[in-house]
Amino acid sequence: MQDLATTIALVLSSSVRLAVPLIFASLAGLWSERAGVVDIGLEGKMLVAAFAAATTASETGNAWLGLLAGIVASVAFGLVHGFAAIDQRGNQIVSGAAINLVAAGLTALLGNAWFGEGGRTPQLDLPASRFTPIVWPGADTIATVPILGPVYHDLISGHDILTYLAFLTVPLTAFVLYRTRFGLRLRATGENPAAVDTAGISVRQLRYGGVIICGILCGFAGTYLSVSQAAGFLPQMTAGKGYIALAAMVFAKWRPVPALLTCLLFGFLDAISIRLQGVVIPNVGEIPVQAIQSLPYLLTVILLAGFVGRAIPPKASGIPYVKER
Image (cartoon, rainbow, N blue to C red; front, side):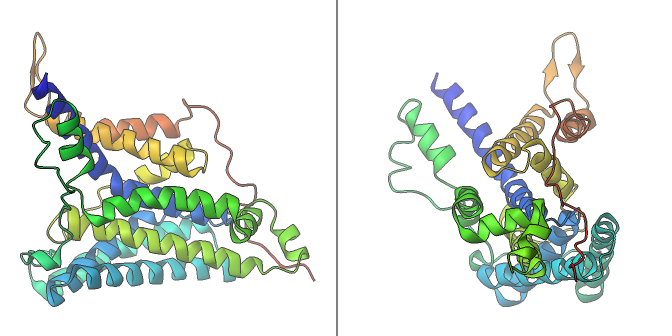
């Protein structure tokens, strides 16, 4: 019984860790699209944030400076997308796709030019250069207690600060969006920007606000990948997580708490796929690794295909606003 509880707690703990970048990125897309700016460039912003964070942490030996660099890089790319989508009224899908392509090429190019390791950054060996797990008080003491011990020791304790911040960001996002004046105005900008403009509120500033918040959260997501989950940057290390986060956001119908639950579902499937590698099923044999690893992506396709019901985005999402004279 204790072994079963420990196994379940370990799988759920792995699910939480794998869901963290998805939670940050899904909330990032939610902020942007609630403001009326479609952003499929989450993948690219996560990638540049991961590269900037790992590079800075490697050179300075400080994970917090790496986080700051990741946020700055992500926000910079977000502002480029904002300029194209808001000021120039360009096609927001094309702009987001361009962000992804530029980020993929630029990070590999700079990584190879600076470090000569095929686009990778140096290994983060110093403890201060990474976000390390936080052991809660009494976690080791009660680890052997049936059921409660594994849950507290493996599932609640032992995560880094960014993991806890990801979960705190969800109620914070819900509160700001639904309980504050800024959140009300931002949601109105995504639904009816003309009414916001008529009230004397700048639609441009609110949309840029949403884009900047999106960039900050993508900075957290990318930094987590390279400075917490891994010990350095690898080319294409986001591996489609930005698109999975978009699917989670759409499935959640642009709401924070359902987005969290969807990201946890994706994380759980990812954890299960890792756990099942090499497992032999009676009368079937060993499941191919590629088939197991495709589970999260298959679920993404299923969700986007509309098998979970119709998802209606904010009415003005993706539509450039032209101020009336």
